[in-house]
Length: 71
Image 1 (cartoon, rainbow, N blue to C red):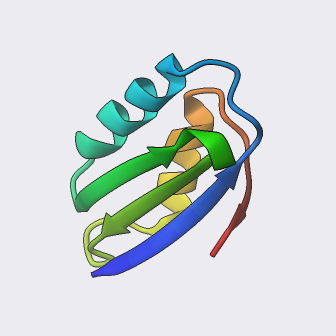
Image 2: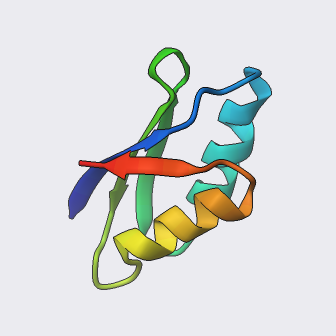
């Protein structure tokens, strides 16, 4: 299992948290997803055999949140 931290542009509202977490937890291969509102980061644990980091970034950006970095 892999854990990555995605840096997003600053969130404008707390409802972003539920929107992103709900979408990620529906994605096959993602074991946990946590949005850190104050730092505008998303911590995701996932199985690389089932979903890739680029796919996760694409899913987040599809919701309208720009990913500006990852660790």
